[in-house]
Image 1 (tube, rainbow, N blue to C red):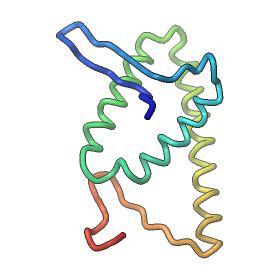
Image 2: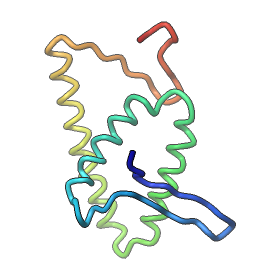
Image 3: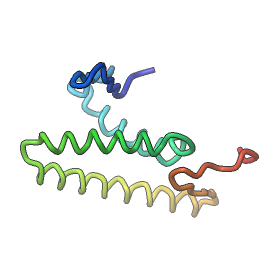
Length: 117
C-alpha cells in the first residue's frame, strides 16, 4: 500500500501533508496516479462519503491555485489536461460498449442496489 496523499490537521494552523510517492524519481507515477484516481472516482469512490471527499479535493485545488505564481496558466493547464483525460475515458467506454460490454453509470450519492454484483 502506498500513501498517495495524506492531509492531517493537528491544530488551527497546523496542517501537514505526507506521501509515499516521489514524482521526481518516477515522473510516470503522476500520469498513472491520475488514471487510477479517475477510475476510482468513477467506480469505488461513489456510495458513501464522496461529497466530503470531493469537497476536500476541491479545497486543496483552490488552495493550490490561490498560492500559484501564475494562476491563469495553471487553470489552463488543468483545463487542457482534464479535457484530454475525459476524451480518453469516453473513447474507452465507447470501445468497451461496442465490444459488447455494458456499463451503468451512477451519479454522486447513488450506489448500486445491494443485490447487484
